[in-house]
Length: 325
Image 1 (cartoon, helix red, strand yellow):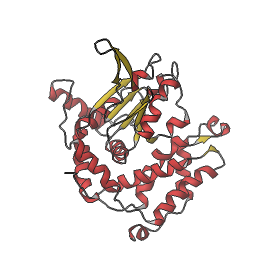
Image 2 (cartoon, helix red, strand yellow):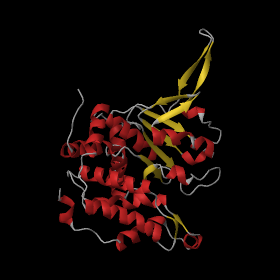
Image 3 (cartoon, helix red, strand yellow):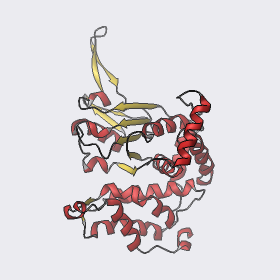
Image 4 (cartoon, one colour):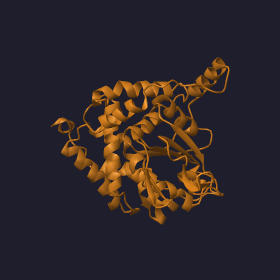
């Protein structure tokens, strides 16, 4: 029997998942919440940060706590598309070619250092990320739901890397930065390591795969008023009208902002979206979807600063409008 959850039942389960993940990743609740927001909204996440900031650990921890199957792919310059999607191999005993699935046939795929492979290999993920399927040998194979990608990249190392094309960046619902922990959190991390007596930490499964997919379905029941919907559209439209922006966010950005806002509302134990939900995820949902004009990025301007300006310019709808049904 299919499990049925309401948005109000999602919040406590999400809190339990985040609490368990925080046993491994200390002092980064806000970033962890953003990652969970994207996963619950059936979206992919790009984690862009320096080495040693627990990017890989975050992906593995969410897989353990949600009961999802997990596969890790280390992207390298010699990685081929078939190394991700799978390929047909000749079976001598049957005299036939048999398809051997690649690591993409999983629930949660970690693409580690995704910008270290050439565009041809990066593009192997495009169909899987958007259509949840893989086409090879004149046959289309569906990926079992949920299929989610967490990709990582180093923002300061450019030697031997390939910039992700806009088409692929647009497939990620959120781009998240983790950052270094503060002194107290880093000490707590050391103290926990000494108490464990081992480098590895095993997390318990808070929910199973069926329950997690039920949580995803519950996000679809979160109410969004017309005023909130038009607020989302106005934000995305404003990114296209800013003088320093060469290319603004696409309609896919509007859909991403809508999905992330609904998931964020459910995480905060509400079955309706308020303007603060939209504001909390707007930068991570839109900043990677815009391209700045050369004169702007030469001066050191950042895309996230442009989104912050859009949030200041676009009028916020009245709070009471968000709950009118």
